[in-house]
Image (cartoon, one colour):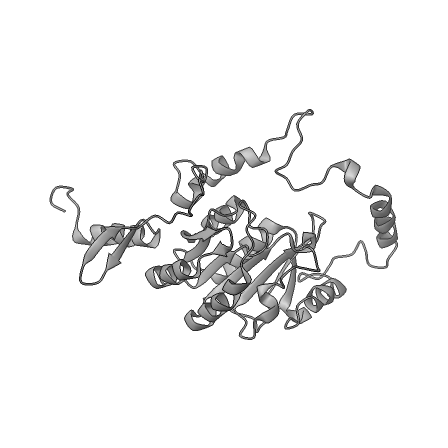
Length: 291
């Protein structure tokens, strides 16, 4: 402290920040050590692009700028999630839009929570959800921004799989939250490392992509779902389940969302329709006020 010219309070704050980020770990009675890196046998992963999780000298807009660049005409864009025009059933979509335009009230102001029949439909997909637990949001980023701002206070820690969806990281940081990484493997988040992260940071928020994780494609193993929900109940952890590719899974083999078996209301489920303009978020349990 004397050599650096800083106070003990500054050192404690810096150590707390490094512990929260998973860079060091403290062992009572022994001291503070560099955290052991998690590696998967036989796997070589380059995560150097994951600058948002570790901080950057630029802004969020600088980090996300490449995602907004318009591709050249001879480029096949695989980043946006929009299917090629030749793959879209344009005649069916046109007919559906024409029929919808004829309905009474189409051009009026929709309820702020979303259309009632659409909320009912989404609620019916989860056995424990009701329409009053469902909100319709204009897009995925809007849904995540709403959740992070509603459930967290500035400076709160949100645990996130490492690596994870860069847009979720940007939304969390825009809400003033601090992202702390949790290692994953080909079967999703590592439960023991997750519990250690909860213990280390005191976090009450967890952002998770249990189905077709972005960017690795991993799906949470069936044997990890129960322990995850038990951990959430025991530590009062709010799980933000981003089920963004729900409707592209094979219904014959797909595992149900975590929110479908959530008796204590710990899961906030985010799911999108295949139209990029419709997305919703809901909690199947009792509504939770922001802390």
